[in-house]
Length: 537
Image 1 (cartoon, rainbow, N blue to C red):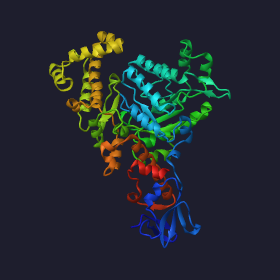
Image 2: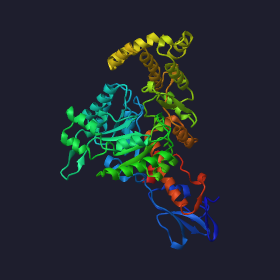
Image 3: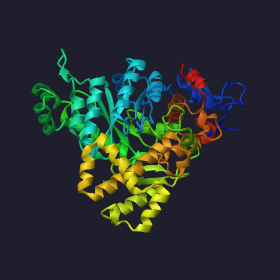
Image 4: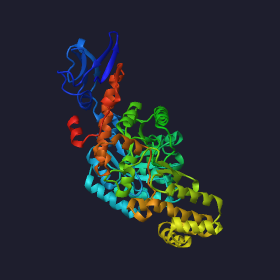
């Protein structure tokens, strides 16, 4: 059976990759050998793939260049970060993007972020020490999530990263720029002997709105610079230097993703922010290049190839990593994710920004969390305190969701905030609606803990952050060794996505020459990591 046909002046011609006695491999296998150029040559009336040499000019009718995965993105990004591949493992809160994931990705030449959000400061500090000891000079990163209701926590995390020498952070869920964020970026800023400005700390911002991207691409706001000079965090000379550097040189355009998301389509979002980067780079006259990567929806070779084709400096994965064996979640959740389809996700109220009506994308298949969380927000909007909730409704909450009297939940919540943030307790004593919000946020927060810890009795209340990319990966992996949750290792998944993207890029190069390809004959298939390394080396 022919793999593709070439339409030309002489009519339709077919290429047989395995039936010809001269062919040594299928077109799919030839596309996999991404380190060598591929030629389609005419032989005995057929078109066959040939690696390394074109033969005579007359017999060559198609060509695809070598395409190594490390060359798919922006080479300056990999060079400056110190990684081989333009591939980032994004942060997932509560340590779901674990230290082990950061270690495995780092050793494989990629960049992994530890998901620090929602964890005790002591745990984040211990992890910083672990990664510094285990990875040394190999790059790794930590997450700094916007905490509008707990600004002191955000400040404490930023200071911890400075003390521990964490050089890269992923800034996520920010609604506005904050003093701790700017403080982290500018720590140690100086002018080098050659006159260039050196900023030891790097922010990779994750945004889904162009107005936020513009703020990150701009120099730090003058108001915040003045505040940092006044409190002694930076000198006046450092503030002057800060006016010539972007707060974030690299921004991840976050399309439809798990967790905090605006459900933006990648095909519309990325070009907009990429164009913004080019315009602001000219406007500010930086001595560095502003770059844009793409996250959200990236989980297969096809989605990664599309991202790089649009000009992404790098790709960032998230949901698909949570299903890997190194993630910091439970085996129960990994099994649930391995059975997820694209329609099995929905939006639910967010624990960290509950009162603001902010939502996160979560798994709905196998759990009642989204429906129950939405009910809590409905009650919060309708009543001014827990005492105003009708008795029958309150009893239902206590029996089905909280499994305890609400006042008992409040006592535990109060004790927690007395240690973490006493101002929350003080406010709740003045404002009964805030007290109700803290109790409801207990359920939302615990839903993530129950899932992470695999508490079987609470499976119906699991909060599992997940985007439709998880379903796309499962469809691609169906019938292969990657279908089983136990086989999903972070580097194996990453290299399959990258190598498959290079494979498809070569196929698309042939397609651009008018060669008709049949997807079922050339589509990348999941490969064992040893096979991928053979094709790369």
